[in-house]
Amino acid sequence: MEERLYDLIFICRPATPEEEIDKVIAILENTVAERGGKVDKKEKWGARKMAYRVMRHREGYYVLMVIRTAQSDTVHELERRLKVNDAVIKYMTVRLDEDMKRQKRLQQRRERKAARRPRGQRPGHAHPAPEQPAAAVQQQ
Image (cartoon, rainbow, N blue to C red; front, side, top):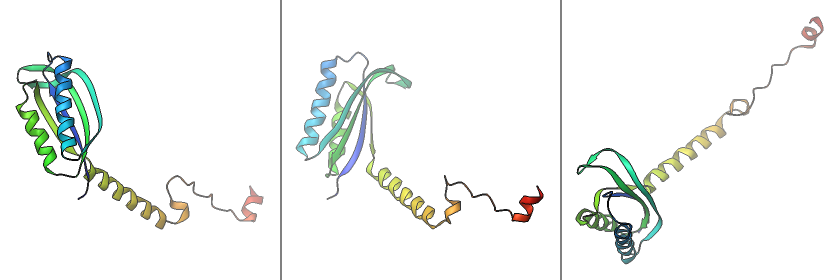
C-alpha cells in the first residue's frame, strides 16, 4: 500500500494549559505510531487571532502536524479523537501527496514543452540580434 502525506492542523481553546496541548499531541502521535505511521513534523504556533469566532472564541492555540501513513483509517481515527477532545475547538486535515504528484506532473510537462521549443525561443535565452548585410553596415 502506498504511503500518504497529510497536514493536520488543530486549534485548542486559548486558555488551554501547555501540558494539556502536549497531552493532545502525544495522543495523536501514539495513534499514528499504533497504525504504522510516522509524524514527520509537529509545530506549536501558539495563540493567534482567528478570522472568525469558533465556539465564541476569537483566539486559539494553533498546532500543525505532518503525518505519513499507509493506512487510510488513521486520519479518520485522528479526527475522531480530536472531535471528542474538550480542548480542541477546530481541526482540519489536508492530503498533500496528491498535490505534490500534480505539481511534479506539471513540472515535467513544462520541461518537455521547453525542450521541444527552438533554441532561441526558450525562456531565459536572449534572442540573437539579426545580422545586417555588410553593405548596410558600411552605409551607416
